[in-house]
Image (cartoon, rainbow, N blue to C red; front, side, top):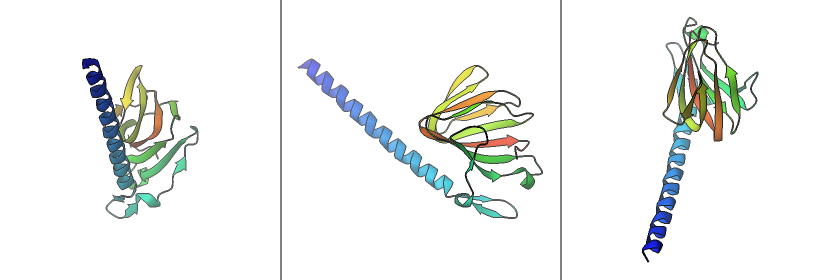
Length: 155
């Protein structure tokens, strides 16, 4: 009887964890949809994020970019973009000459490889990538959205 009760409690705990994960996934989806429907405001203009084009990455298959803030708007001091990495795709090893980069994970999950270190990426995580340091991002099974910022600007 005790073993059966322990088994039932384990099963219930597993189902509760799965339900909680589904609720978190719904919340992530809701946050992402609100983010992608937002607006970029600056002194002279407003730009709906949904009106911006997804640009396929020139080198990495399954990676697309939306340029939110570009260097021409910041005297080349800052740029900001959304990076979309499709499920299982890779933003392979690369570095940015003389540019500091940050990643803020908006949705999805995956792994970051930075200077020999493996970092779990999931919503809420932020990573600082020093200039000239090689790094790589691998999206998990649900893909990933990253808010990336560069100083000086990338574009």
